[in-house]
Image (cartoon, rainbow, N blue to C red; front, top):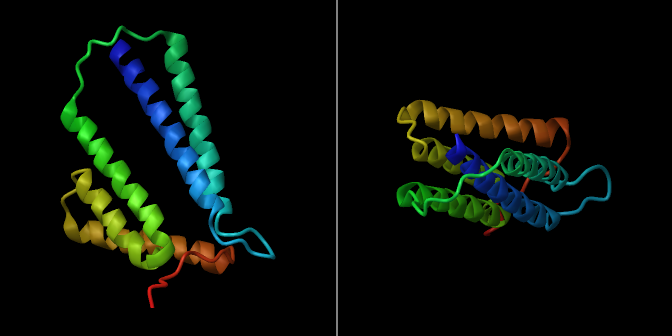
Length: 151
């Protein structure tokens, strides 16, 4: 049980760092004169993620941490680094590639990366989730999402 608390603490710290970066990137998004801009929702989610990461870290520290054994699962660490790097590339590239073009391949990659091997269902889910998010934000909330701008 002690090992789980240590992993929870590291996960909580990683979530707080990711949330801080996400908030920073959302701050750079287009500002609008009327209503909430496209950065409002990512900032809200980042703040919630930061808070939950803080709670996870605090909880693991309060319950007591085991002494580290010095063993690191390099394969698991590499997978985390790869996924975080792909996520950062996704966020940065979205400014040029746009939400609609970049999100389905990103979600499909996430499905594959986490070993979901039903390709047709993963592809349909990736496209469906992208469409639903686009409809909700663009049509219902009137929040513009990043668009393709290479041409």
